[in-house]
Image (cartoon, rainbow, N blue to C red; front, side, top):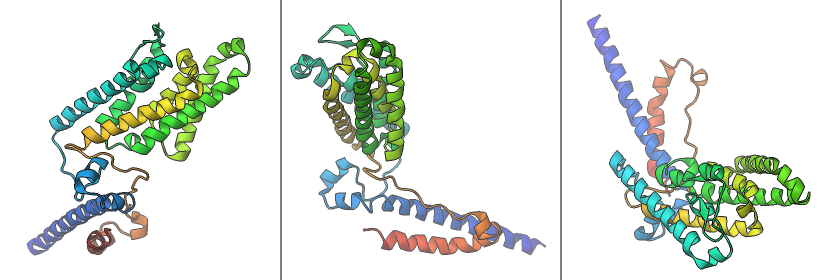
Length: 293
């Protein structure tokens, strides 16, 4: 009986060791497969250039919390400061009465008109993109595709729907302004879902573009303003997030990690799963070493 117990304990220890090997190899495989499409091209660039685009030859080390806090603060502060300087101080945008809230999501007053923008809209949009792009940089919602395309889609849908409601006349539009804002946001959400470009702050872009008079007055000029704002956020995020961290995780397509087969397909998870894990480990090892571009 003691011999059987020792053999059983050795088998458990061996299985646990094999699970750790499989997990480690799969993590490395997932990381390397992340670069098979987009970053295989980035690897051709010089290291000093590809680094600032999020490319890493090896998985980055996990940073201590204080490093994450530090660079989140620096990135958000500098990024929003640049946006506020561009749209709040540049005479080109002041002459065209571009509300700074569109760019930085932090200003309550439009300097060209000295009118207070709707505080409800400011509450919705304040710092939303900054939280994602500087604080939650590994989230799919914070990646460049979601940031740029999500905001642009929301702006386009809001402008189009606002134009259609404007055909009803000014008085009728004021009565149905709430419907225009709700419909613009709802349509923007669905389009982002269909195109896989979901970015929560973009919903506020659609809402503000429909219900705020100053923003609505920009009409089609809103689109280049949104594109410029998203580009500035992206550039500053690439600069500050790649000093000791990594951004973006992906540029165009997210990587779907491989999933294990269900227990019903494998049979008894306590018997057959153990027998298949060594094969999975050897296969993942060969993939890790042989299929990386």
